[in-house]
Image 1: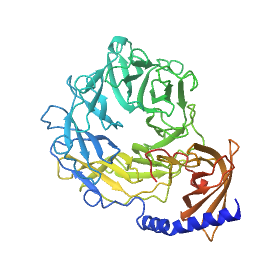
Image 2 (image 1 turned 90 degrees about the vertical axis):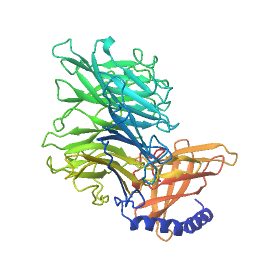
Image 3 (image 1 turned 180 degrees about the vertical axis):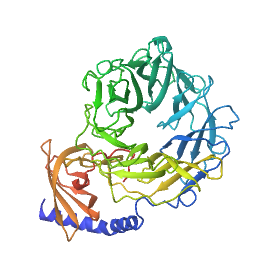
Image 4 (image 1 turned 30 degrees about the horizontal axis):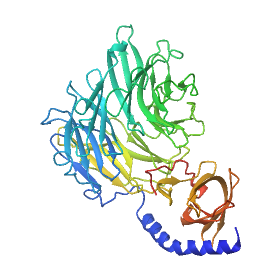
Length: 535
């Protein structure tokens, strides 16, 4: 980097530093984990409707509105699942259903709703199981049934014609193309003892089984190589960036957790485990996995129990299914109910600790290696005078955290109250100035991604590895980087707060055109920055 360019860059950063530093100081003044008083009433939304039931899932729309699905009673329509939508400020959305809520159900009988996702077009998908079948319901943005999905908004499918008389979905995920993947268990009672299989299906845009997936839209998977019966039950599913589908669950007759990865057409992926299946054994962990999440680098996060006491922990698997030995398996909570990744790759863990009847709600944040982030402390608060049970977490585009809770009143005969809290939090990803929907960050090994456009408007990208040196007077971190494509670049980032570097500047690269880069301090170890995350 020439001295002239270094001076120009330092002056530009210095000009920006005062404004950014003031913003950073304002963030520091309000610690992470504190209630955001601008949400609901003093940071909380509390629903005390007589028709309330247990909240099972929630999601955040692109416009910041919050959609919640809960088991419910007292419905005027006969549905037993209530869907509620809040505006970004934590008040009911009058443009959704009746006064912000609507009821849904399965015309064939009882419906257990436990998975919820919002499509890019604003339509809402609620998935679960009914009597012996997988059930999905799709609503229009206003909360009314979507007539273009299934039978008047409801899709049902089972595996009875494949010899499995009963089936039930445990989780669902939307693909980028809008198709819905559901996983669970299929049971064949003709065998003694009964046979169970990973059961997976995919619905097309119209709510019909996708003929391009498995056997007419369905797949059954046994684990014969590791279990004497081949029995397996899927508990969670996630879609990878390349379209691969990963399912995790429990195996019958053996102390192992089963993982399977499928190609987009439903075939087992031969590059994963043993012919697409992997059995994870561990002397320290109980079998069975759930709450699957995929990291940006393809590694897999899931929940398993420990063999000592009743604790549960977060476990990380490599992209080929093997357990990642570099990730700490620390026992923090007796029960984990939700797992969510921040945009900077740190992991939010929601659950409870303490003995039954005396449980207290917990929200923890883990670092990239699985150790606890001691700098994150939740502000103590309660929704009602009884016990709170956290059921889910979501991260808003600005990095703030939403908590979904079920609260039980001491004097209410066990009647529950649905609550949502919003907490202040920060992530350390930086938005790409040329593509605001994308975030840039470093891998654990120090590699960074950078993108820009040259003078002719041509897109230019580089992948490099940097080393840092500090310039205390200007609070700059300077990087000399050589990109894998043979591009040499000099870059700089200023520190808005101690140990956390970030910034945006012009960088002169040994490339055909001058290029702007957005980069991060590699000490942040931000390997999971992704669209929709925090800034």
